[in-house]
Image (cartoon, rainbow, N blue to C red; front, side, top):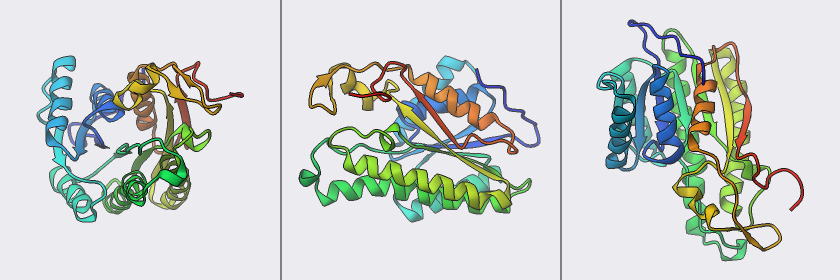
Length: 264
C-alpha cells in the first residue's frame, strides 16, 4: 500500500481527479481518500460523481463531508475548466494534486473509416482537456503558498504498442507523453512535479470487451487478462504521496500476462 500522505489540520492535501465518475478515476479517488487526501471529483455527469462519493462513504465508513467536493465540468470546455479551478481556489485555497484521468475511446475502426468528428472528440477530451487542466493547475500551483504541487497524467501503453484500429486514441496518448515531458521541465522552477502512468488492462467498463475477446495484431480475437482497477489506483496514490523532491516521471502498471511485451 502507498505510504500515508502527511496531513495537517492547518494545511489539508487537496487532490483533483477528472473523470472521477467511473473506472480508474473512481478507484483513484477512493485510494486517495484512504490516504487522507481531500478529493475534488469532476466529470460531465454529477450523478456518477455522487455515486463515487456514496461508494466511498460505504466502503471507507468515514465522514467525507469536509474532504470532498463534486463539480460537474466538461474538461474540453475552456470556461468550465477555468470555473472548476476557481471553485477549488475559493473553497480550499490551493491544489496539491491533479490526476488528469478523463478520456475516451473512439470506435475501433481502420483509419480510412474514422470520421473527423470522432477524431476531434478524441483529441478534445484526451489531449486538449489535459492541456486545459494542466494550464490551470500550473497557474494555481505557482500562485499558492507553499508553492508547487504534483500532476499525474493518465497515459496508455497504447502509445508504445497500439491496438489495431486505434489511431485517434493512440495518437492522443503519444501526445500526452510529450505534454508530460514538457510540463515536467517547465514545472521545475515552480516546484511542480509532473509524471505519467501508463495502465494496461485495468478492469473497468472500458475494458469489458477484453474478457469476451479483443482484436489482436494478427487479426485474431483473443481474451486478454485484466487486473483489478485498485492496483492502478494504488499506483497513482503512491506517485501522489511522494515528496515534491522526488518524481515518478513514467510508470507502467499492467496485467502481468497481457500481450504487451514480446511478439504477437
